[in-house]
Image 1 (cartoon, one colour):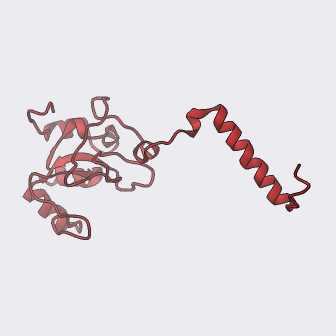
Image 2 (tube, rainbow, N blue to C red; image 1 turned 120 degrees about the horizontal axis):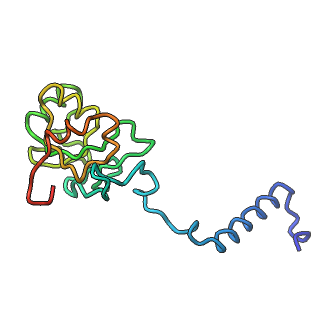
Image 3 (cartoon, rainbow, N blue to C red; image 1 turned 135 degrees about the vertical axis):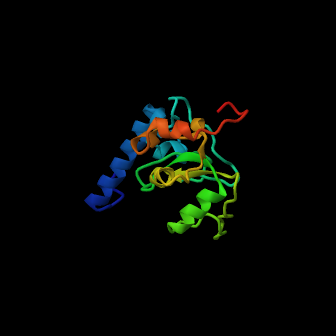
Length: 165
């Protein structure tokens, strides 16, 4: 069958491996199903209450993966897992530390007080220690935040709203 192809042996081996993979995926369709970008990168998808993570913000679209969720993955060195309601005080504080979230840049619209945004856990902790931390949307904050910030600290800045938070 393959003698008429006249492929070098390494190329023939590659073809055989590809065919084997296709057959394996057909026998195991769950391996072939497409994963969302979000679920393929996440460390967890749970909030502080061990429930499914809620959307932090669709506009401005937030999250390290710009999917509205405060999720984190191995490539997110900042660990953007705390959903917070921006305040002038916090925005000024973080700008003074070199992270200007106020000014528009490219597709980033810039933030204003009242916007919800996924913050780096360590930046939120730094702001908390300096009395500048914004309020937290607990149901939209990933449980990964607990590696960097105590639950008591987060609860002390919990945003109370009619939205079930």
